[in-house]
Structures are given as structure tokens and as C-alpha cells.
Amino acid sequence: MVIEAQHVTKRYADKVAVDDLSFIVRPGLVTGFLGPNGAGKSTTMRMILGLDAPTKGTITVNGRAFSEHARPLQEVGALLEARGVHPGRSARNHLLAMAATAGIGAARVDEVIDMVGLSDVATKRVGAFSLGMGQRLGIASALIADPDVLILDEPVNGLDPDGVRWIRNLLRGFADEGRTVFLSSHLMSEMALTADHVIVIGRGRLLRDQSMADFIASAGASVVRVRSPEAGRLADILRPHATMIDIVDEGTFELEGLTSDDIGIAAAAAQITLFELATQAGSLEEAYMVLTEQAVDFRTHNTSGWEQQ
Amino acid sequence: MSVTAPASPPIRHRAVESQPVTLHSAIASEWVKFRSLRSGAFMLAGAAIGMVAIGMIVGWNTRKISPSLDPEDIVASAVLQGYYLGQLLLGSLGVLFVSAEYSTGMIRSTMAAVPRRIPVLLAKFVVFVTATSITILPSCVIAFVAGQGIISRTRTSYSLGDPGVLRLVLGTGFYLVCIGVIGASCGWLVRNTPGALVTYFAIILVLPGIFGNVLGNWGKDIAQYFPSEAGRSFVSGLHLPYTLSTWAGFTVLIAWVVIGLAASAFSLRQRDI
Image (cartoon, rainbow over all chains, first blue to last red; front, side):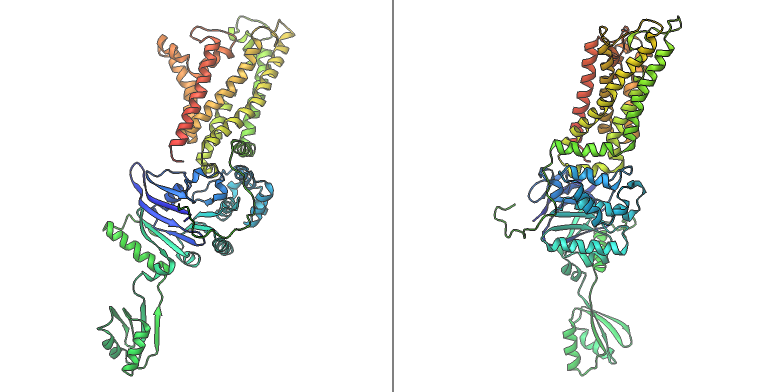
């Protein structure tokens, strides 16, 4: 276990941002951190870094509070959603100041500037940077001490497709080396490509902590689409065994509760010709929507105040 | 958490070796921050040049004694009146050196790199005091020598060797450095730039003015304990009623600095970033 949250609650003056949250982020995996806006993701990330103190509970990195580590930048490299750079300073000077706290010199600073593709603008004031360039600087800052743990809040925000792919490969490489990656993003397609494990929170509470495959599967029984010239007769045969049958049109229906193998065997037994028999894999987005909608219904019948992206 | 870790992760070659965070490395970082913003250099240069220029102007204007001159314009410290400008600039510099971290969000990067927090406060203190001392102390000496040099051509002037004069000259520089540190404490406590600036100017200018001028004698008793009034006890060669004695004023100013820093440290440890 690398990052461990135990019964963490964070209460601000007027609201509970995180509510009795426990989870573990393990090394060697990319762990995605999902939840609607205001669910407490950024607060949780700030608590991991010791910027905000939990009202109750503990969060540790490698067994200790983050602030107790002698070499914090080597322990955790972080990119938080809100920019953490003085706009009047150049990218290089910002990184030099960060690096100096860890006794890291200019050579490594220039190396990470090059790595994130900011060499041409390294001496320009950060205030003139685009959103994407700001993200690259934030990533450079996270990488400066070649850390064991990466915590990235919305890292692909504002990045061009090249940048998005670069980040994806970087994170994959990180995890494959046995390091820990904890990442939040609203881009479900991107998250599905990058993450191995997901932690989903809503209204500060843990909703799911499981592998990406299990989470997607949990969206509901997978749907099988059947196309046949005798669709009506086949549907009648299967109806007692299926949990749901949805007649799409005259020759097509979708059903849940049976595997494609079951349907194929049943069709052969009844000597019914099949044109198509396809399991519709669920998507991360679907699973996420189902889950967060349930979470909303569970707590309030008014969904208007619930921002979703 | 368990003593027997199941399997240690593969040992990888680290691209760079980090050193533990120390006060020394925090100072190195704060020094990079201080020198990489133009506003810092401008304000320091403005305070130093203003000190000397105002000293020379006062020297020129008071080269002949006339009945129209205030007593304050004749004493040895007259040519050091640039400190009025200096305390605005250095106080604002102190405020901004801290509050800009909060207003830009830089503080999150800073504290993620030095999560124990207090070394950042100490490092900023060391960098600020060093940078302001090496510019302001010499500029006070130059302002005095240049201003008195102009006066000496027409009337008797003071020299650095005269009794109490060195105390006035170095005291002025010391006062300005202290007042800048008090500005920085306003930054740590209030965090947002406009609020911290207002707080600083209230403590230095507005409140002592109200207590000293509007509220009668009991107000004057209180006013003398504000940092600017306490500083006047060793910055001005003219001792007015309702001004603390030199050493009492010196002690009161130090107390403001120490209490300000202690409150800042407490706030920094207790509050979320």
C-alpha cells in the first residue's frame, strides 16, 4: 500500500467535503479517481499532500504522513488542478526554486523542461502561458525529483492530442516500473485507456474501489444483441430465462441475464438461424453514469444541484 | 504499515538524487524566488534610491536655518526622512513576498515541496532580512553623509562620529528592515494581498494617527506602542512627549516583530493552505 486513507472526514465551515473515506492506492497500477464536481477529489488530493488537514482520520504515504518525509518531492510529485505558479516568474525559475528545496540543480531542471517540451519558452513569464503550457509546467514540476508516487489532478486538461498521448505513455511507464500513479480526470475515454483500478467517490463518500474491468462489468449484466429471421420465436423461447428482453425491431432484440453461449445453444436446439450474436461490452462512462445517478437518487431526489460533466 | 512487506518493488535507477529538505535548502529556494521577480528589485531599489535622494533634498532645503523650518528638519536625523517612503515600499515588499504566494496559488507548490511549512517561514525571513539589510543599511549611511555634506557647505553639520548619530543612522535602517518583516507577518496572517496591505497600513499609519491625534491623552499613551511610533524613538533625533525612550521603543519594535512571527508560525501550522 502506498497511499492509504483511513476514515477520513473533512468538514469545512458549511459543508462536509469528504465523509468517512477509506481507500488504498497500490504501487504498479494507475489508479483513477472519479467523481462528479464537488465530490471531494481535489480536497482528498490536498489532504494526501498535507495541504489540508483531515477533520478526522488519517492519510499516509508509504506509511507516514506526507509531511514526515525527509524528501517530499522524491516521495510524491503532484499536479493539482488549481495552478500553483507565480505568473511573474519564468518556467525555469519556478522549477529551479522547487528543485532547490531538494538540492536538485539546474541540469535536472533543464532535463524536465525538455521532457515536457517547454524548452522554447522556459525563460518566458508563466503568465503568458496557454492552459496546455501551464499543464506541461505543472507536470515538469511533479517530475522534478523523479518521484515514487505521482498524484495528478486533471493532467490532460488543455493538452493537445500529442500531449494527451505522451501523458498516457508516461503514466503507463511509471506504473510498469512499480511506481504509483493516482489520477483524476473527467475524460472517461481517457481514463478507460489509462487506469487499471478505479476509486469512485460521490458527495465525499466512497462509492467504488475496484479494478477497471470489474467496475465496467458492474454497470449491469452485459447486454447481448441478437439478430435473427425468427427473432420473435427465439425471444419467446429465451424470455423465461432472461432478466430483460428489449425488442429493437422485427428482426432484432437485446437481452440481459444470458450469455451469448446460452443463446447460441438455445438457438441451435430450436434450429433457429442467427445473423448476429454480439455481447455489448459496457463502457466506463456508462458504468460511471449509472453509479453516480444512483448515488444522486440515493441522497436527494433533486438532481439539479448536482453538477455532472 | 506491516513490518513484513509482501514484495519489495523492483529497484529502479532514479534519474536524480534528492537531498532531505533543510532550512538551508529552503533558503536556497526562497532566494531563487526572491531574485526571480522584478517587483522585488524595483521596490528595494526604489527604497534605497529614495532614501538617498530625499536625504539630499532635505539637506539642500535646510542648508540655511530659517524660522520656517520645523525642529524635525534641523536635527541630525532630518536627512533620513526618506524612511517615510522606505516604510511604504519595504512594508509592501514584505506583504507581497508572502501574500503573492497565496494569491497566485504558488503556496501549494511551495508547501508540497516543504510540507513541514515552518522552514518556509524561516527561509523567507532570512532572505528578506538579508536582501533588505544589504541594500537599506548602506543607503541610510549614504543618505546621511550626502545630506550632511550639502548642509556642511553653509552651516554646521553632523557627522557619523557625533554622539548618538550612528545609532540614528543604523537605527533607521534597522527600523525599515523590521517594518518589512512586520509587513511579511501581515501577509502570513491575512494571506490575500489587498487585505494584508490594508492591515499593514492600518498598523503603521492609520491606527497610530487615530489614537495619537483624535482620542486625547489616553489615545496618545496607546499610540506610542504602535511599531511606527516605537521606531520613532530611535529613528528621530527629536524626542517628543508621548514617545517611548530609545531602548523602550527598540524593545517594543522587536516585540512586534517576534510576536508577528510567532503568530504567523502558529497560523501556518494550524490552518489549511
